[in-house]
Length: 135
Ligand code: T46
Image (tube, rainbow, N blue to C red):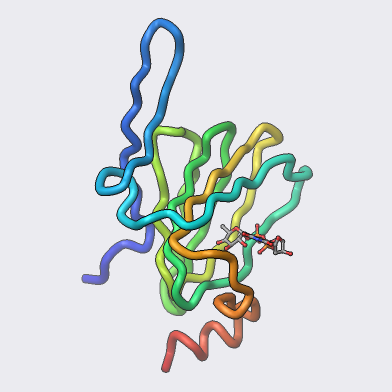
């Protein structure tokens, strides 16, 4: 049996009467040293994003507001998950085609990455990706 493509991690929450505080810490929710953080927000209605894979990059995606559906494809199987809680993070390793759909207007998707931005790490053509994972 193959490992699931969707790997969710629990993000510790420290809620009290004042509200919520969530923590992504190395060795706990974060399995790698973070070298870059970016966030996707203000996504227009009906827009989807992603449509690429990475050769090396590891990322943790946390939907800190609203919701988004993320699908992952390894060249054979496709799985998807709705992220709608800052208490869950989705780990996405290399060799996975990702697409992001159904962004809510208030969605803020925060992404922690283990490397600096490098366009050479992207595979943005699906046919090329399928060839790449079949090697
Ligand atoms: C991913 C998914 C979940 C930068 O200059 N630096 C950066 O760190 C990033 C992430 C992007 N960019 C530039 C590259 C493009 O000109 O921002 C523009 C939009 O990037 P892209 O079309 O790749 O965005 P998404 O939302 O399709 O994909 C992003 C990440 O790029 C990708 O690594 O896994 O979010």
